[in-house]
Amino acid sequence: MTSRLRIIVTGLIAQHPLLAGVTWDYLQYVLGLARLGHDVYYFEDSGQWPYTPDGGASGNEWIARDCAPNVDHLARVMARFGLADRWAYRFPTRPRWFGLSHRERRAAIESADLLINVSGTLRRPADYRRVKRLVYIDSDPAFTQVKLVLPRGHLKFRKRVNAHDVYFSFGEAFSSAVPDTGHRWRPTRQPIVLPEWRHSAAPGEAFTTVMSWTSYRPLRYAGQNFGQKDVELRRFLELPARVRPTVLEIALNPTQHVDWEVEPRAPSSGDGAGESPRSTAGDLLSRMGWRVADAARVGCDLDGYRHYIQSSKAEWSVAKNGYVRGQAGWFSCRSACYLAAGRPVIVQDTGFGAVIPAGEGVLTFGTMEEAAAAIREVESDHGRHAKAARAIAEEYFDSDKVLPRLIDEALSSDAPPAVHA
Image 1 (cartoon, helix red, strand yellow):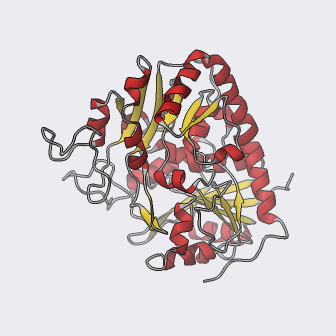
Image 2 (tube, rainbow, N blue to C red):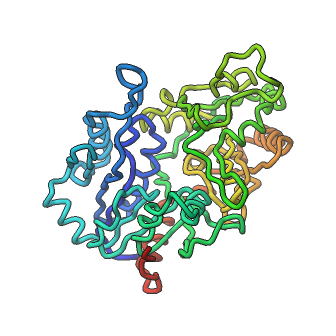
Image 3 (cartoon, rainbow, N blue to C red):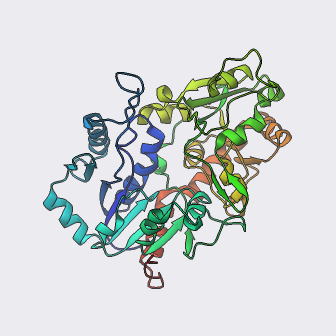
């Protein structure tokens, strides 16, 4: 095992105080590295304005002018896990730092062996070049690579990526649909701190997931659109009718991007006669037989999000259209948490079968018929699939296994130098 290292992890924990799934994604890097005995710091320096989750006084003010709730959230999370003196957050407006003092931040940077830039969240990674090695974690495969090769509009993004020394991706099995960017993308996956997810409660009645209808604009490359979940979920709107009495529930983020997302309309709605001028995704899902929960309610804190997963029977979920089109081998951080909780997952095929076993505990689908058959299979022998789910988490997502491999490769002598723009 690698000796004790000083490691800085980046993320967006303060940026999204009511999205506990996002908090868990970044937090499990920090907790997992600490479990391994490393000296870990968490830095949040994204340059992004924090959000106002409720839209502020007018209901349409989404940029927070006061970051106190965001800082309080981050401080509570870090203190809960014994990391009260191991975090720093930069509010971009003034700018102003919170958490570690300037001297403490500088000392951490100058003495760090690794900086793990999870999801590429650092605004200016070049400012951290005093760290011995900068590691880029691509959690958005296909989208990341397309952005890097598009001829216009993404030069700043390429410069940010190129400032690193070593590159990892959740795309563990890139297909030919993913463009070559000139980087060596090493496979990795979400680390799961398994003791945080074990429990003995009986499963609930519903197949669930937590999702947003859309997250960001689709990209176009080589004549193809790389879209969001709205594109894929529309293909399976009639699934609840196919699998009754099984309950399918989606905890939905209510945010809509009305200027560019696919409008939520049922396949049989024709020209929309009789419908409201603009349906919401929740309205559409409810009409089609889905049970809809509020993601802001069920996933607003760490314990609530974890309980929602643990109290589910299993997960059923589509992937972003870009992941399906790219077939890069992406596997969801959220789905890995379901597995760790001993909950089977039924997820859309993104090519991950080349690296993660599917068929027991994890089932894939590409068509309506395959989705329905997978649900019936899990219903028929839930105990077997639940046991297999936890076993897959232990073998493939355990932070005690994922992170040492990541560190060893990041520090290996054959890691190439940064690709400069």
